[in-house]
Length: 326
Image (tube, rainbow, N blue to C red):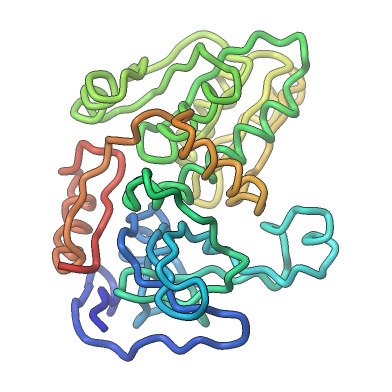
């Protein structure tokens, strides 16, 4: 099969690789659409020790079951493979499973390829009316859905339902959509890129600003740099909630004194539970997350250029999707 292989820092090669082999409960999926995630970019830049080269990246995928009794079924892929038996899994917090695996990290190759293998339990059937390119958005949308759900559960019931999202990339935009789907209608996105601000406003209908001021009961940091954490801890209202979903850099930024004196709740959020993923997929199918027409779709063979364009800040759209088949 053809695949886009991460060969080293800022180096990707599109070439023939061996077809994946199903093991255990895995089944074979023909990938029809796969998104480029921020974690893929971190690996591409050499910033992710969990993803050493050579490796096939990519975990935001949808496709078609290739063989077996369910052959031909259109599916979106939950890339997080968990044991199902540990205390975290039994508590339906599968994202905290100590033996979790995710495609695009060894030992599971990723979805920048024509085929992947994944357990059947990780699949959600996609209605025939939903394009698979849209279904591939379930994974990044589920990340934000999970963050928003946890933040709203932590927010006091009497708090004003008003939110600030830091970062207008795919996760930030998805957070805004998830907030609205879960009942928060007053949402502002902060995004430094003028081109992306214009796109978010004109194409996505979002309220977006270059800078923010004031106080917000709920703040979503969809970037995760020291500077954005400092911004979040400054703009969170007393008694408010910060949900931190970005993984830009490891340390710095939080004003712990202010957060302590103002009783601001900080929640680290990672991926999603299996139920969050299913709920997000259903929200997509029901149209509750909007048209999802804000993706730049390119062939997988042009994937290396797509990464360079992202690296150079030349992409206005919040998400690039790659299609592995001509």
